[in-house]
Length: 288
Image 1 (cartoon, one colour):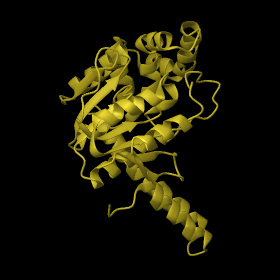
Image 2: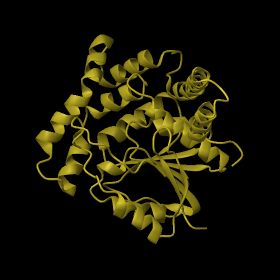
Image 3: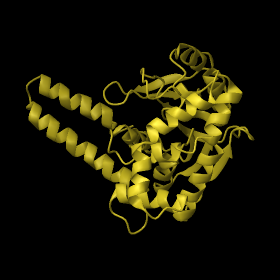
Image 4: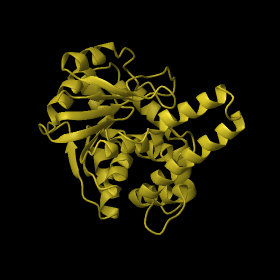
């Protein structure tokens, strides 16, 4: 790869400040500019036709899906979605086992608002990790992309806008239905896989993202095995394999990721990139 990825560029930028080559103020301004450039790429991929504000576009998109014309009401639902999702978990999942967790995600309707609002970047900029992933995949000349745990499909929209063949896979029927709606609204093609009903195709992808997914999984080690089968030789998995304690998100059921890393190693994957500056993502490459 010729171009350094955003986290590397920013880490090196701040190292120059520590060495007194430029001021901290100059570093902060440069970092803000580069993050703004990434945010522009992200928002452009998600905006509805004719819209130029990501919040307004998001509210319209959800309102249309819900059949609600009152955008103020849609916004209130978005702003309260984190707690609504938490309440539904507490009411649905009595014991953390596959059937109960699957039932929860299959009916977790408020996740639409929770994820869509997060993707407006109003709360934090961590969704921009998808733009860093796009940089990586483009530099590696990847073409076939799997968004594992696709949620509301924003990552897949970004990759599709940039010419990738995209597949979205999730266990939530309601979220997959929302993703189909989003792609149809934009007349974009994609493949959708309901993981309750179908396995991932073998040897189909050269790039996979698993963004904030593994902490939700009942069987994260088994998922590594499935991704190994789905990846082409030399393919990449770009994901975040960590979870902080968060009382608002009891759905984060995985704390120890050592078995995941051990399975990657056993299957011959090599870690080829680690973001130790911005969002903590890692990239593992399947053996060629």
